[in-house]
Image: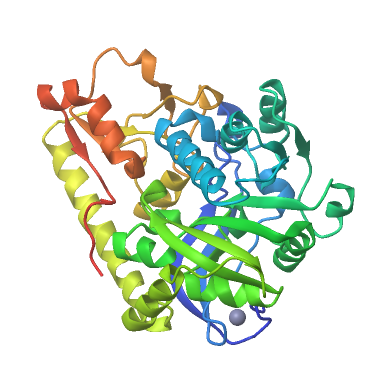
Length: 403
Ligand SMILES: [Zn+2]
């Protein structure tokens, strides 16, 4: 294999999470035990320093019909609302017509906020089901994979292009970056929202590593990729969503937007911490192995005390964690979820049954919170249970930083 960003063959294995099923396909009863497993390994490029998976599950398998809906969590929708408001405030304030393209637009949650602010919106989404939902809500959306050849059919250029999360799933990395360059107006702004690898490591959030996430960026490594396509970052900051996501504002090289200096401060911090070096990832791998030991021990103790334990949430990333920790239905009776698309399904690999939140009559003694990135929202919503003495265990704690 060669590096997905720079074609180097100098790739060093740094994190091995074993063999794992594709984490986004929750199983129907008849599929249980028949799901294929793939290697889940992170390698580090000695040349461009980008962390990445060394195995790709075919994208048709990965994105044909996923069951993730961005509209279902309030904090994510609020985050998208804030981003729309910020962009609307900062850029093209006097323009008569404002246009935005959202790549990987999901159910249209992000674009809905722009639409309310009077923007002309267009989404590109690869999942059929979610495209349908977006269309039903009046968000113009094309059901297609974004790349440099499909952009010929788009009503370009766009003043703003948004890509939240998806930019890092993409197998056709350079084709996508090239497509963005071609679609972006000469004074346009490309907003990349991505899981920030330095923060993932500091939070111990290894469950963010799964087959859909082929690449794991810091700002330094993102810049290296963009610079190959004539794009440059002029502002960036860290937002709390998903336990730590980078908001990077990008333009054409030589574009009109002045640097805020914030992106330079972040690049300097990465340099100071060494967060782009192989050793940083090797240390992380050691910590992950330690977390496995501690988590298994803690849940084992609760089981021995006769406690009933449920998983809270059935997020995609929870499957990385459950499979790597080897926590199955003998420990967690079920995963409690509110996304109706997952009703009656089983978690891939560990085969834990999913139950709907509104069907739980009696709470368990312990909730093992897989959707840990919504910690504050969960503790607020579940205040009554906390008061009753139900224990909430967070396998990954976004409030605790361990560099
Ligand atoms: Zn490389």
